[in-house]
Image 1 (cartoon, rainbow, N blue to C red):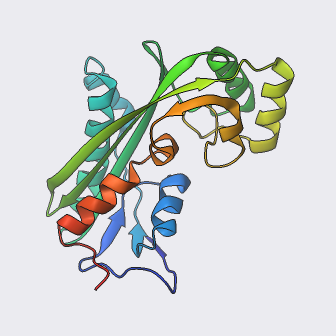
Image 2: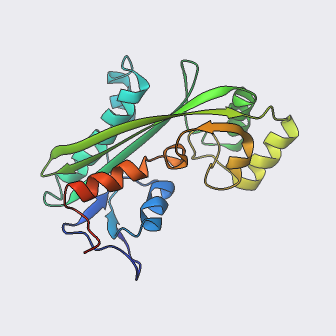
Length: 207
């Protein structure tokens, strides 16, 4: 288990664990000054996705986030375990993490000039129980991109592990004509609602 340490970090009243290997989620918590550990869940996401595929995407991301957090909470009962999940959806089609540059190019060709949605779910578990959950959806429209623009972007950022095949926190933000919603949610976690919940649940404080 890795620990995020910063001299200006907010020390929580109970240990906080991020049950995710997402660099973007880790970066957002670090930017917010939260002191936390990382323990990647061993949840079989593909199996759960098959079980919940009939649910709205906004509910699926919460269920997946809860499965990850619950798995880690069994090992660390007293900790506040944060689970998160994200789905990029074009129409009724789920666009998975591409896994290769070639598939990233194909995914961006589909999104070019189109409106799509990023669904993000987050939850907090303690003592193997969900004490808070939340989901948020952002509507985005991508510029009509040339094939050269798409290929150049993929070569520059290599977004093979990003939902939607773009990294919104960096060069990817240049791909869009509009975004209706929080950039944190597009990056994979509704940060402000999460921080509010941590405060209201007396897990963090500036005192």
